Image (tube, rainbow, N blue to C red; front, side, top):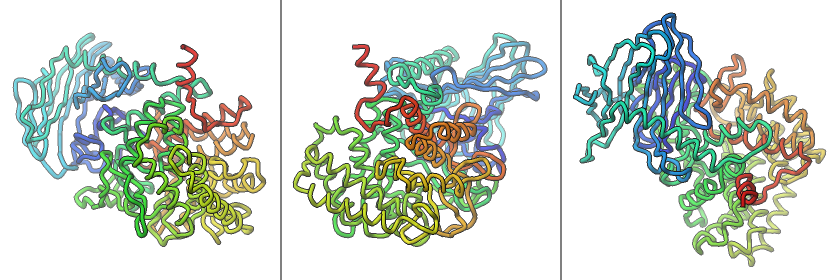
Amino acid sequence: MTSTPIGDYALISDCHTAALVSRGGSVDWLCRPRFDSPAVFARILDERAGHFSIRPAAEATTTRRYLERTMVLETMFRTAGGVAVLTDAMALDPTEQGHDLGAGATRTMLRRIECVEGTVDVEVEYAPRPEYGLVTPLLAVTPDGVETRGGAMRSLLSTDREATIRDSTARFAFGLTRGERAGFALQSRMTFDNDPPAAWSQDEITKGLDGTAVAWRTWSGAHQAYEGPWADLVYHSGRVLQALTYQPTGAIVAAPTTSLPEDVGGERNWDYRYAWVRDASFTLDALWVAACPDEAHKFFSWMTGAAATHIGPGSDLQIMFGIGGEHDLSERVLPYLSGWRGSRPVRVGNGAWDQRQLDVYGELLDAAFRLREQLAGIDEATRAFLVQVANAAGVRWREQDQGIWEIRGEPRDFLYSKLMCWVALDRAIQLAPLIGGEDRVAAWTDAREEIRAAILEHGWSERAGAFAQFFGGSDLDASNLMLAIVGFLPADDSRIVATIEATERRLTDDRGLVFRYRTEGGVDGLEGSEGTFLLCTFWLAEALALAGRVDRARAVFERAIAFANDVGLLSEEVDEKTGELLGNFPQAFSHIGLINAAWAISQAEAGVAPSRGIESPIEAARQDEA
């Protein structure tokens, strides 16, 4: 049973897939060739499921960092005899000049360990276990390194070091003195591919690592211009979002992992290697601030393309898709994996893919509203689809659904779902000339006002003294903070202020971090509990900033960012008792929340209402340069 803390991992990515590297130098998660492909290394879910470790033989203290403005990881091991530096990256083409990062990726993991002081004895273990540990492959020493065959892929681990192979594991042991280094390059191809995996020389590995750092820095320089508080964190979170982007389509995975639990030993273990419509408007806001409108437009184009189906009677807008646009994400269990710290079941696929979640109509149209200036050239089919989305929101808002949190209990009249149907209609009315919906504006306006009246009448709970999770209930839900963020009511409205204060008092742990909702009510139909949700904590900070309570907003924001690990990565949740990071990792939603809350606070401190307008910081910088 694996015990390495989730927060001990760092991310490397080539914008096609990603690996998690532990503080001890072990790659314990890697899917090939895409984020959602079966894992080659999955020790994070089971000790027997494969790893690739490089570490000193002697006991060592460890520090690590990302090289400045990159996702190239540097880990320093300090032993009694010397100091070694391990550099890890997924290879990127440095000639891309900051555009389409990942387009020239070679699908190669590069690793190099170098002695920078004294002498260090090094141990390397290479134990690939394709298909989440189901396959024990054949390994063979070749003149170029170690070849792996078995399953759907064949791999070559390029190195000039001598290996011994036993039990389908290649082991290397060697000493390094100051100035000496050893490099490894892991490349895979599909078994049926006529081109074998390419061998990398030691010089090519060094050039590949240097070039990858250049590619990330070039992208950062071309795409990032935010100048508010916590700029380093905002920039880093923008790079994390880019690292979680599947370059061929622009889709952004919610996280690169599956089944890291929300409750240690519990059943709340889900596959997050997909892209959610729910995330669309939040993601575009974050990309607008911390990356570039180019990425935002590509993500939106992919999302509308994947979602574009006829929405008629008895059909719903699907809530999530595979990163290539796939619709069927059927869930299954891998019974042979023990799970992180015994948290079973381990799932691949996500059973929520065919749930009804009415909020997606609002999130998709809010995303369109963000990019409204770029919608002038959209094709007729996409315009017609967006009109269908608004029409569906205007008709279906009265129906019950599973809500934003994808409950597996009985459907209800969740307030957030009604709110986002209101958003869908509100944004569609403003977009009507661009999407050809002028003849629908009167009907959309009537439906929008009906929803508003229903939320104000049935969503407010006198018992709770706040807006409630669902109509007629009295439980709280952090998603109701969005009432202010999307502009349904002013943030200083007494009912919004009361909801913010109720959230602070009754929906937080002892550290002041926010729960999504209280699981004791049983609304989600699952056993056990879960940790506090970092995105919801950032929502609280954002709502406080909008309400003009900037000092409190800053305090909440600081509490949340304190749970970033040593290389600035955030998980989905924090364990209420231990403060340990929980859930799939790193979590795009948490980094999105960080960016959007930082922006809201920066605008509030400047005395400006955070704008949902069109000009991003990078666009403003480009205009200033012009």
